[in-house]
Length: 167
Image (cartoon, rainbow, N blue to C red; front, top):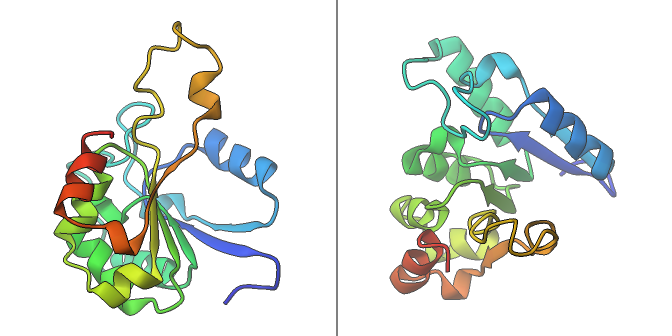
């Protein structure tokens, strides 16, 4: 575990320097683990998968996985890939929380084929749906919505399908 009163969060998906700084400012109790050289370059703002042509060398892949395996929480699904998520959950017994970024997070969790024990140990949240309502309808609504939480007891094909659809 991290230092008392701190949460070690590994950035598993592309995240701009501006947003990393904002996270640190808003939540000073986190230790944000990020090495931009291990993440694919973003093709546009909010691109959580990054450049599809980008590849890590074997040494960089090892460093990326070591960073993920050192965290108690992940920002994003590793490589936006269910197999990489399953590997990380199984290799990192300290992992307690994964925040999925894009719509479809629930379907990726389902596709990872995690066991009941793994789903009971790791909480999954998502930002999906935060921008589902036009901002002009209610300027404060996008900022005030709570993240969706997928409790282990409710992660089923129906829940995952609903979460993936932004419900």
